[in-house]
Length: 385
Picture 1: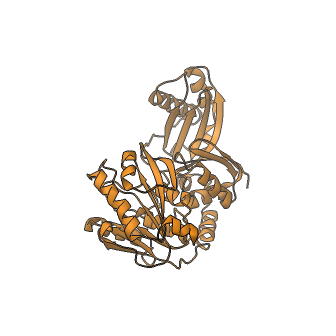
Picture 2: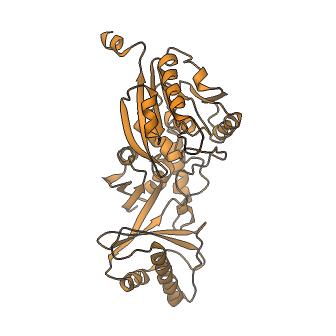
Picture 3: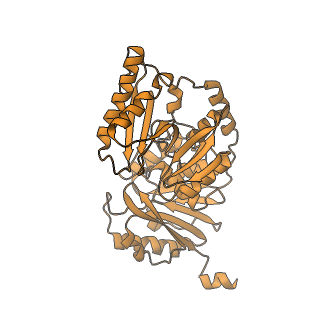
C-alpha cells in the first residue's frame, strides 16, 4: 500500500505528546505544527491513527494544493480537480473553510464558492450533482487558505471530532473534553503506575481515559463510525485486522481507580459511562465530599481532576480552592496531584507551590494545568531521608 501525507489536529499544548503517540504507533516523517502534527502512513495506518490516537481531534488527508491570486482562480482550481474520481453524485458532501489569508475574509462565502465549483464539475461531467449534507456527509472536505494564499484541500478521515469516543452518553454541566482529559493525563506522566483518584469526577471522563491508558485500550474502541467507512475504497477486512491487533495489545491493570463526587446525579452518570466503556471492573465510584475524605492506603497515589472554575458551576472560589490545598496537605500524603483550572487567580488560594504549571485551553478558556507533589511529611524530611 502506498504512503501518503496526513495531518493530525490537536489542542494547543498537546503537540509534543501527539508527536510521541504517532512515533509509538509507527508513523513516518513526523513534523510538529501549531495544534497539529503531520506524518506519512498508508491506508492501514490511517485506520490505526483514528482508532488509537488519544490526543488527536481529527486526521486529515491532504489531496490537493494550489496558489491563488483571486476568487476566480480559487473557483477554477477547485473546478478542475477530478472530484468524480473521489465520490459519486449519489453521495453527499460538505465543505468547511478556514482562513489565514489577507486576500479573503469571509469563510462562509469561500465555502459556498467551493461547493459551487464541485457541483458544477459533477453536473458538467456526469449530468448529475451530489447533494450537500452538513450534518452527516459521506465526504467531508476541509479547505485551509494560508497566509501566502496557498490553498490546501483535505479529506476528513475521522468524521465527528475524535473526542466523541462513544462511551459517554451521560454528561454534567461542565464536562471535560475526552481528548483534553487524555492529553492532561499523558502530559502528567500517567501510565498506570499506581492507584488513581479523581476526587471531583463529574461524568467520569478522567476515570475512563485513565483506565484506557493504564490498560492500553484503543481510545476510540467504542466509537460507532469513522468517515473513512463511507469511502469507496474502504477495506473492512483491513480495518477489522487492525482493530483486533490493537485490541490484543490491551493489558491488565493491578491497581485501583477511584472516583468521588458530591452529587448523586454525577455518580450515576459516571457509573453509566464507565459501564458503557466496559471498565466497571477497574473503576469504583462513590458519592462523597472530597474535603471530608482522606487517603485510603499508604501506597503512592496519582490524582487528576477538573474542579469548578466558577464559570458554569457556582463556587466561592477563595474558600473552595483553599479547601483543595488544605485537604491535599493534611489528608493526602505521598500523592502526586494534577488539576486544570481557568480561574488563574484562584491558584494562589491553594496555598501550595506547584511543581509544574502548563498553559492549556479548556474550550476557549485559557487555563493552567498545575501539579502539586504532596510528600510524606515535609519536603525537608524528604530531602534528608
